[in-house]
Length: 480
Image (tube, rainbow, N blue to C red; front, side):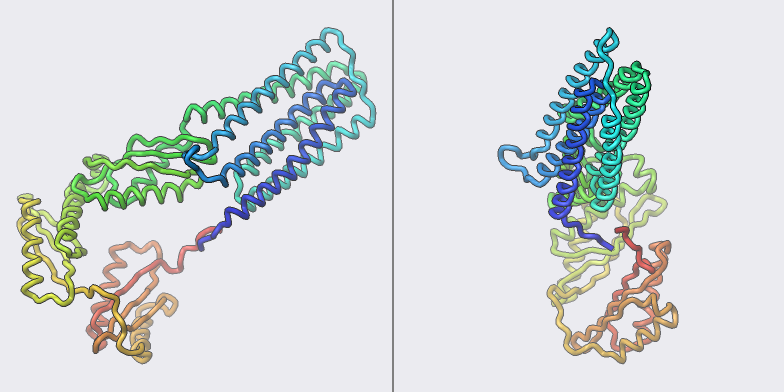
């Protein structure tokens, strides 16, 4: 099942949570720093500045969400994500300043400063911040999972460290109250280390994003692009930007004889699939190159894989040039290396046999010019209407039941998914949907579809054409 996400409502919900968490974090920060300065407890001041990191991450999250909603414009063709990175650098610098100030105070305390004045009220006020942080973690974690928000989940993980820091600070205050004054500078020093770690982490990430560090593993991108039909090889894959807004560019090698339209279609499909696989990607630049197939891929699919791909593309190009359709291509090779080609050619239905045969002769002649080693070409001439067909009568319910009875004798009723009969000028076209286990080999499913088609045409009169669609049964349920 496909789940449609209302991104606008999601953004609003995430902002709402971040504003609530920001207010709570600011209240905790102000309380800790004020109590620390009032009592002289360095560990409390350090913990207050550590809580400031949480408020900063909330602001970054709010900025990221706001920027994510702004489209690129002429002044900023790549969007506004860099402003978030600049803000991260500023926050990292402020944290370094805070760590320096607290470190200086620790040195003065060790050198003979006045010990902190801890009272039961101070302990109670600091202890109150612990359940507040716990509520923040629970709120952000639940909202992050519900809204599928990486920002909220990451912020909750960061805030969770505050629980351990606050617990350590409360323990040090109890120790100071009991006469162990040395606990205050010790715990303060540990908190300073945590602040420095947070600062350097922010600065490292921000510097990497500004310097266009790789965001997504190139191997993962190439695996997605190689799944696109017609792609032989992917190289020079790069990604840059920030985690929430990534730009990707890559080079794709395809068959040299491919038309511009075909190459453009492949590039568009690569872009579509990469964006679907990586939600943070906002733009993909695909550079198409003519080239030879990757030797490893050729070895994987057989020694003649590259030859078959080239023949298939050449046949499609030749058919396109003659205004023909082509399908059901089979290529074989004898012991002398000569090629034998079989294909179905699609013609307009109002052509005469002479006209269709002449077009097929031209088609075969051009193939031989392109592939001189071709020994024989067999083409099946197939007339196809070039317009939307209109039924000439209502569906025959008796005939539908007859077809259903035939099918349910070979399949379970649940596997007969759909039956349609379309009367057309004295004949009847039938469209069927049948379900088979998903692990069934495609070749076996195709053979079964052809068997059903042959038997229906032989046993039920007035049927002109039958299309049998095979799909997995029971259907795969997509996760919500």
